[in-house]
Length: 358
Length: 116
Image 1 (cartoon, rainbow over the protein chains, first blue to last red):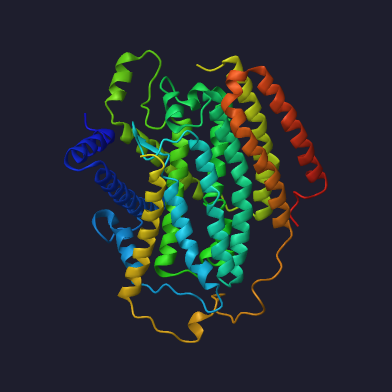
Image 2: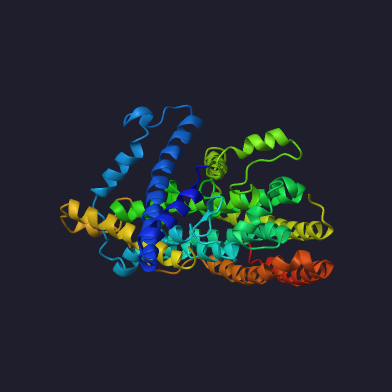
């Protein structure tokens, strides 16, 4: 059957027959590198046009509709425009930090792709501490934002970066605690084992109400962590011009923009993996016929379907809730989300020990 | 692919960003003038230094965050074995959370969680 892991295995055996071990490894590395760059660029283009189309749909307007059929090439045209714009460095800026910051943002976004299972048996690195790796690497993101804001020599940038720092570190806590609920339930940090434990049902269904609470907490926290509306104080355009990337232009700005969108994809992919079963098809109890029919849908389609559904939900938030003030934002985290997710974790632990899940 | 995938990913990220920036450098002819390098603050000339003192609230939150983040690191190994250890794991974590929560209440009482 046609699948990603089948293609990967075919390439591996073909290379093994024609080259020696060293060259096989090098060629595989190059293929993997080109593939992730392609995925990155494609995700950027797709998510930008998706964002604009979803916003247009929510506001009953057409959205971009000039370039290509239904305007699907609009983001490609935008990229070309950004490519010929000058990437300036302001005179008073800290030149080194200013130019290194977009690279760090890109590296972090790229590194987070490693433990994500895109299809069954199709994963760059199935490390046994996958969940811990994700939360460790994703917290480096805030360093690039602080670097960009500090180095710009612009008051708006600095304010935006400080707000963003306070926000990201705060919401990391409840995101981590809600992820731990899943880890307690299945007793492993490895992505493939977490997906395997959801073969007979996704955790959001198996774990009853406490798991649902963990899922909702996770979605709220990652929306804040990726600086998306209604938590987009860091780049509140009506008060801070563009936040930490005010001074960035041309390709350096595009890199920040791309990293931001890929981060949204990654957190949604993690959410889909932990709570919605990753590439596992939807199975309902003893409905043999239904389960068989669901198995025919390729696993990659399941994964991308779930992930893009979560991305759609996060875009939906943007047009539903007004932006929060900084004190409201920090209150929401420290006085509501954090205690709720701590108590929720205790309830989930009791459930796991009692075996109150199926 | 194993741990070597991290090297591949880092190289891919640096190559991607580097090539993109390089292409845009090649494609355009940059001109300079005095106004161009000024910080963009809504067209009004900038006053004073940028790197000044900021609201202390940010640092207070960073300090409380540090406490809870270290707690989170301790929770990861606990979470893996919690199910197999049984009730003793739950009792231990309740004691741990209780101590932590006292500290949290103290910070709350002192007004560290109030935005100034």
